[in-house]
Every structure is written in structure tokens, then in C-alpha cells.
Image 1 (cartoon, rainbow, N blue to C red):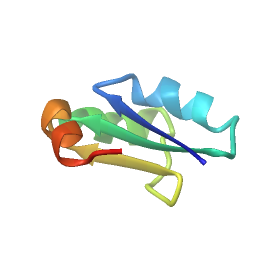
Image 2 (cartoon, one colour):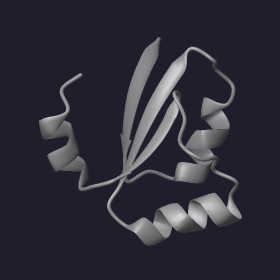
Image 3 (cartoon, rainbow, N blue to C red):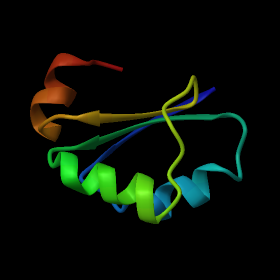
Image 4 (cartoon, rainbow, N blue to C red):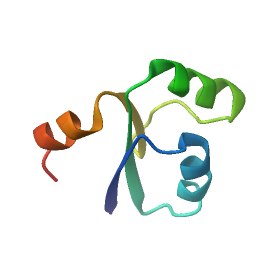
Length: 68
């Protein structure tokens, strides 16, 4: 399985690409909870599951504390 971490990215666009490949797991790190809420309500980003996790955090801190 491929594990990808995205920081402060276009959540909606990433989710569409992510849907295409069943072998991927993605953590999307976004500092602003309003951006996540908008992505979920307006761009159909699904709830978190075993393949997709949206985390509210500062990207640099997240990467420093979550080694691959």
C-alpha cells in the first residue's frame, strides 16, 4: 500500500484523484478546520476511513511527529 501525506492541499481535488487508486492511503493535513468543513460539505470529501484521513494540524509539526 502506498501512504501519502498532503499538507495544506486542495482536499477536494486530491480526493478525486485518490478515488482512482485502491492501493493508496492518504493523510491530508490542514490547519484550518473551516477548510475541511467546506471540503466535506461542498466538494463531497467523504468521512475518514481506513484509506483517507483528514487531520486538523500544522503540517510541519505533524510530519515531525509522524515519521513514515
